Image 1 (tube, rainbow, N blue to C red):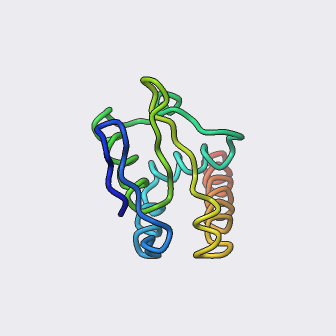
Image 2: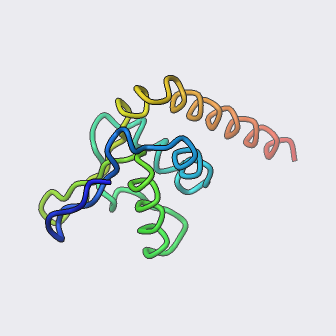
Length: 120
């Protein structure tokens, strides 16, 4: 893991240190999957304040840390904002097709659950 050189820099794993089990763990949580889906749909990085998640601020911070430490996202400070972006190129190089398959499966699940709820 690259270490932070100042309190404003965040540690991220080098590409070769990203592990499949860490990525799958990060993607297995519904809240973290919301973040990843939003980042995948965005054309640019998104600030932490963009996300309106149904959890406390401290829990939101935890979810972002898990995503960053697993190598799924890159976080950088821009002024007072912490910006988030997917490490799509790194994930694709290490695990070709994984991120796109997980995102597609999540979209299908959302549709399936919405249709099931509509029938009730």
